[in-house]
Amino acid sequence: MSYFNAHTHTHSAHAIINAPLGFTQFDENCLYSIGIHPWDYMKYCENTEMLQHWLYSCVQLPQVVAIGECGIDHTIAVDVELQEDLLTQHVKLAQQNSKALIIHSVRAYNDVLRVFKRTDCRQPIVFHKFMGTMHVYESFKDFDCYYSFGNELLTRSQSVGVLQNLPLNAILFENDDSEIAIDDIYTFAAQQLHISVEELATTVQQTAKKVFDTKFV
Ligand SMILES: [Zn+2]
Image 1 (cartoon, rainbow, N blue to C red):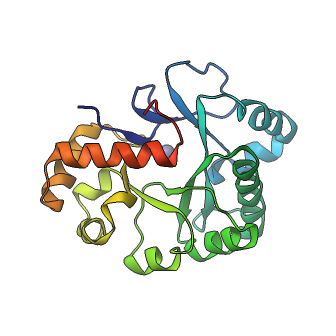
Image 2: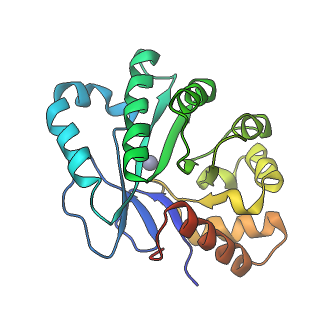
């Protein structure tokens, strides 16, 4: 049984690996996302031409199945308008290349929603490390959204409550940059959902195939 990992920084199979900035050593047997994290905004300003070239050339690779992580973060010292512009570029890149988006949103769901409305985003959208409420879920209902839970699920009761209320086919899991094994997140989530871990893993795998439009997950 394989446990699909929707966002990780570790080289692994059955996962979407978040490629580091400027990464070019794409393994034929792995899947990747490429993008400029809002935390890397200054690096992006210093190397705009190189990073634009990197994004626009690597997006063509079949292993690159998603754009991100990208998004908006209200806890960093970068003007929100500038972050919105960069996110808009990522949405357009996803639209032009028919790829999914992996979104980083910290206290910024309204800003992210505005970008999706303005760009009329029809691509699948994965909220990575989702810590929003059911109200956030409702506000994104017009879009093709998926909600990925990470290690915080194990310690955060609000996240468990949201997990239990979301449609099963809108849920993904990830271990991001944490030490925790993806299997442990699935085991815990299956217990909270009162289903077998096999059923959960099979459902998530079907979701991932649809979201990332690939049979290789
Ligand atoms: Zn990450």
